[in-house]
Length: 261
Image (tube, rainbow, N blue to C red; front, side, top):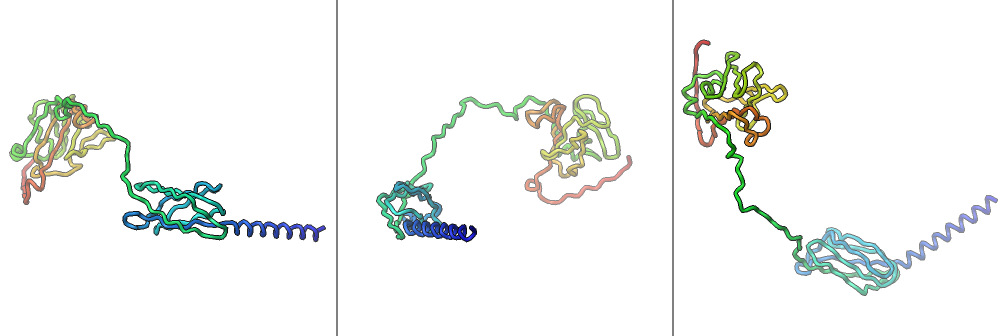
């Protein structure tokens, strides 16, 4: 029984091998190169598709524009597609068994036609956020040069609607709405458009971005809500410390001070 099974298995393998050899003998191939018709340069990544002849399949051209398609013997058409080029179709390609047909493919570049784009604008003037109704006090560099200070908040003393309380040698709390306290973080403090505060506990820290009076160009104080200008954290006013540009004010400066407190 075992000997008979081995014989059947050998016959089956021989039949499969003969079938594979027969099918391979009936195969042919289409080979070619895709080039630009005007420049003759090879075109890579062109999609080559087999059409008709009862066959199907495709390939992409390589970096040299070459491609190879394995097909059964018969008559075929191929279609070449590449973005930026007109689609090329070549008909009447006859492929014989165990033969290779050389088919050059030349493509013509063309402009891409995109969907139309409509742009609509209003004729009226849009309101500017810079025109938001908010009262702004400005302390200029000239005024700052006349003020003896240990903290940036000292520049705001005497401004209407601003309450400054000193809580240390060089530490002060500033509010523009409500009562002053040890954690007066309701006033949004900025230095050159960067937060100078600890957001998690709403605590202002003027030294988070260290500056000196010689570096400050001006200090702007917005007394009321300024969300349109500075965002939602400015509900109780804004103190904006703006430093001088090194391009506008080149050179070196030295400041010496002393005294008792």
